[in-house]
Image 1: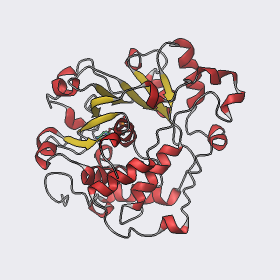
Image 2: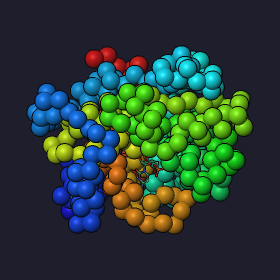
Image 3: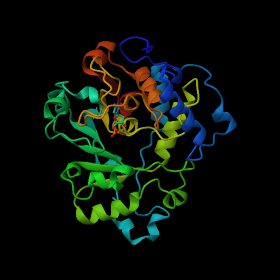
Length: 322
Ligand code: C5P
């Protein structure tokens, strides 16, 4: 319905959403839970539409992946800070030649992409997305699992005990205040990320486990807003975009699966659940619609790859000069 063809149109705007979703987006824009506050120079309307290569350069410039380390304030005064990895994530992991980012979209169901996904040197998955029982469609390799603080804290997910989280490197994030000030965040996390982190580390001391510095989510948010013609939700980007940018820092080539929906496009929220809601694909809380516009503009692959395989191809930051 009004979505401009069969594959993602890179100028999707909120007026292409149905009435209910449009209202939700408007509400989040008005709510501004995290205190988004743009300076005059940052807050203006998009001046020009940037090309794919220009967008890639913008991302490369901002995308310094920082993870919390024991000596950072305010953490260094807490005993548990010694549980944080001493090395930054980017020096402990990779570099990889090829990487797959597996969105959790319902359109992965019956995709048969499992073998193709597993053929990558590294695979990133999100939150509670399982592989067991879904190998044919999503593969079985997990190099990195990016999890949000809600999944870490919610009773339903059994984060501390479920084997779902025990393979690969864990990377956690939490929607932080826009200031990205670590003190402010520490006292005002969305969910108890630090409590859960400490518990998990006690139970699984051998598994590498990082926490993303919150500046990344808001820097990325600014790049999104800056490149869209309308105000976007004042909430952090989705795990899917965070994971994509993370892998662009670690890999030469990044394939993102079913972030831009293929011909299998569906109202099904996740491939591993039967819950239906188009908001999962189009965004509600997250500025997901705009994230997808940006990824579409940066895609180096063909529209056919998107249509048939839900596959986007992005170059690693190390493979191009700006
Ligand atoms: O729902 P969850 O955040 O765990 O899913 C992981 C990521 O996959 C999302 O953050 C989003 O970027 C992407 N996704 C999507 N379309 C869906 C479901 C998830 O693009 N229907």
